[in-house]
Amino acid sequence: MTALKVTELATANISIDKNDLLAIAVSRSELHIQEQLGTATREVKRLEKAIADGNKELASKVSGIAAKIAKPVVTKLETLRDQTESKVKIVTKHDSKDDTGTINIAISVATSDQWGGVTFCTLSGEYDDTAKALVTKIKSDGESLVTAKSTAVEWRRRLAQLPTLERQYRARLAEATLSKTKQGRGLLEALGGDFEKDVLALSVS
Image 1 (tube, rainbow, N blue to C red):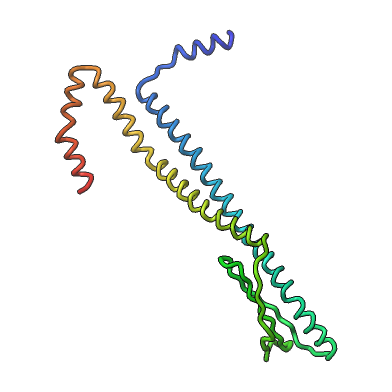
Image 2 (cartoon, rainbow, N blue to C red):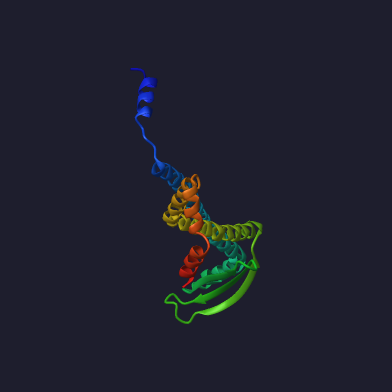
């Protein structure tokens, strides 16, 4: 038996009713929603990783800028320390503000046990173009992440509403069937008016 005849035989023995049509419609909707949810979820993860990587790269870049700014002072202090055979430690710390692109650096001198440390000087600097570009990208990715998360939430909401969608499809099929006969149209008419008002009142009570 050829493949074509097998297909024809299988098709001939298949019986399709309204419930099958309903299942097809709901299944297609579910697949579409799942695909969209998957896309949105992957975008959320991509953006979260991009932001994390961006922040890590920015922190490294800012540390490098701070070290470069502090280097002349640190070098002089190290020379003095070595000449006097001192055991003090030279400590450089910095903090930054991404929104203004500024870096504040504090250079302190402390004994080896960290007691009696004093701030030698404070310096300041600005982000270079690369750091500024990173800040802009991280901010843009953050805004996109908010949108992507909102999109994912919306698709999850639609997935949760599939039972409601199925009821709506069933209602449409029933209405389409009833509208074909006079008696059916009478029933549909009876379901309108006060009945709909009662249902609305029930939904808000």
